[in-house]
Length: 292
Image (cartoon, rainbow, N blue to C red; front, side, top):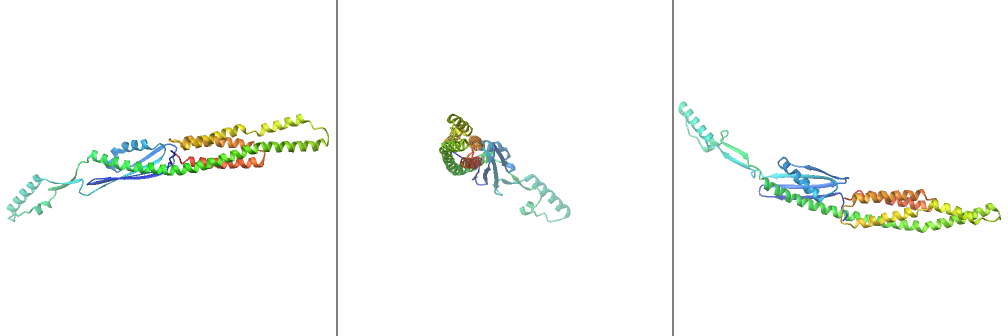
């Protein structure tokens, strides 16, 4: 199935304390070129992401953006240090006794003293992070591949239409070729008769000239190869595989045959058809550049 190299996908997964969002977008590229943007906490999973992308995508410049949102309390813990609190209480009581002060001390007073309470981050659960990342990445890749297939289907339909037009032009040129030869024979015979002014016309010499001309303008081989390339293009557009590179090669080959046909065209009508062939092939090649 034809797939475009442009696409977009988004996935999201969350638990009680965090949410991971993955966005994937791509544009045309000769090979697979990945750019991964991750928050620091997820750096360890970069290779996991690259491998997952490479399993589903063969070509394109792919940008993967991952974001991690965490709740303020979800990964934090308040710790109480009783030894430090006891040291404060002991020292305050001693100071109160020495200075004759009131030694009343509330829990609220104690909470305002440095290092009695400390807010710390809990260690990350690597397995939970990996599972959330995999879930959101799978969603994004599924949507991304689906968007590529949908765009690829539109490209395939357009290319099939252009291939049909190309076949019609080739058939038109095939029908015109013998007519061009007949017209040349008639013109040559008429011109020779005028030059001879009633003298005997050498039919053998005339036939030889016509054979030389026919050989010079003969495009049978080019037409056979061009028709074969068009047929193969249509066949490949229905294939269940990556076809971008192969179709690009076929488009180059078709352009080569069209150039030869145009160079052999001594008739205005044939030259116009040759130009139309080159124009259509160029349009096909431009579209092929968008296929994976």
